[in-house]
Every structure is written in C-alpha cells, then in structure tokens.
Length: 289
Ligand code: SAM
Image (cartoon, rainbow, N blue to C red; front, side, top):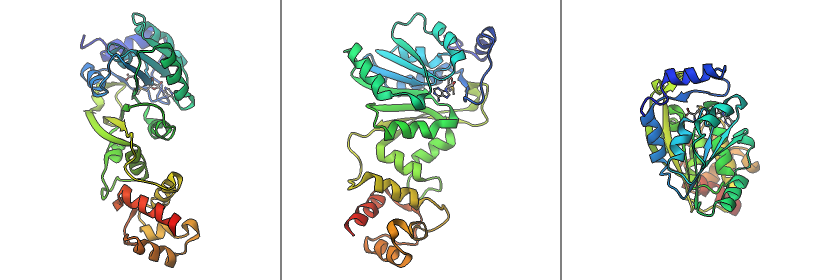
C-alpha cells in the first residue's frame, strides 16, 4: 500500500498518458502515503462529510478521502488529468469529478446540490494540496465567500503557513494573517519536506487546518472598514501605523495621531504589532468619531 503512488509509478502513469507535469499549474504530486493519511486524519473526515478537494491531480489524495467521506467532489482545472483521475477513482461510487478552475467554481451551489442529492451529508470539509501560485486567492475566495464549510485542510508553501499562523509582533505577521485569523482558528497538521513530491518543489510545505469560526473573535460595526484599516496599516511595511494611516478617511497626520492616542494606540507602532482587537478598535472608533 505504501508505495501505491511512488515517484516511479506516478511518472509511469503520466508517461503512459503522454502528459507531463505542468509547472504553470503547480503540479507537484504527493508520493508519501503517510502524508496523505496525515491530511485525511487531520481533516477529520467521516461518512457524514462532503469533501471538496481542490486540485486532485491524478487522485492520490482523492481516493484516500473517499475511503472515509460520504462524498468527494474533486475540482481539477487540467483537462489532460481527467482521464487519469477517472481511472484512479473507478472503483469508488462516492467521487464526482469537475473539470473547472476552482477560482470560478460556485462552491456554495456545489454544496447545496450535494446536500439535495445525499441527505446523509451533514458537513462540508475542504481539502487540497494547493497549487502554490494561487494559495492566497483560493483561501480568500473561500473565506470571503462565506462557503458553508466547517474546515479547510490544505497544503501550502511553508513560508505561507508561517505567515498565516504568526502572532502579532512577528516579522511575518501581515494583512493576510489578520484576515485569516479573523475568519478561522488554525491547527498545524504536518510539516512536509520537498522530497515527498514528484517533481520535487524548491520549497518545503506545511498542512494547516483552518477551522472556520462560528463566532467572529471581535465585534465590528463595519466589516469592510475593518479590512480597509488592515490593508492601509500594512500598505508600507517599514512605516509606522501613523504614516500608513495618514490620509485614511480624509484624516490628516495630526488628526490621525490624536485619534490613535485617544483610543490607546501609540501612533509610532507598526501594523504587525497590532492585535485583531486593536484593528477592530480603530475601525469601530472611526465610525464613532
Ligand atoms: N492533489 C494532488 C496531489 O496531492 O498529488 C495534486 C496536487 S498539485 C500540488 C495541484 C493540483 O491543482 C494540480 O493537479 C493542478 O492541475 C491543480 N490546479 C491548479 N490550478 C487549479 C485551479 N485554478 N483550479 C483547480 N485545480 C487547479
């Protein structure tokens, strides 16, 4: 079982179908059975779950998910991989394949249709070994679109995972950190060295489980304004919060400085030191001003 998808086997399958690994589409396929199992157990997949898999490739992770899930919907952009994928899942009656760009897929509609057809499905769990070139857009599409999922268990470049899990004060804490931590709590599932893929990528990877919060961690009067404050705060990384926020909502330097001091935030701090609550305080107080 452990060498079911060894490097040589995957290369042979690709050669047999006269296709190569597309660098542009981020095709680095998993060859390590233990990592595949770690993802499936990390995602806590059970028979009441509808799993949406992003980028199934030739289906290594797909079948592992299908062994536990009620239904797996696998969304793969590359037309050339579809016949291979179909072959991989031929013995499974709980896998459906969609040949589409995940960024254009109506995920809410997918979930609704699945629930209509399969009454036993209770939760949606998103899983994927993501194409690195669009990791952030995919995560933000899922979170901002409020997809009805309980969790998102995904492999990404280690540096991106470090950024998402950073706490305030860390150098890698950025706008994306604050945004993702607003929507989710995060668990690290497993670190994955580059040797676990074919072809071998230049970077190591990490699997995170993003647990979508049922209740948001801060109270907001205007969610969009909160994200605008975060974006403005991180607009020039080496500058102080005061410099980054000067001009925001028409407030001059002097006015912004007084405003920040008034709500207990030192204007000389940098955005990466602010907690979600402090970003929320700024946004909420701008409305009350
Ligand atoms: N899940 C497989 C595995 O673990 O071996 C493949 C993972 S590979 C890193 C990423 C996969 O995502 C590739 O199969 C690639 O073709 C697919 N992909 C890339 N961009 C995509 C997109 N926009 N929508 C859906 N799939 C995409």
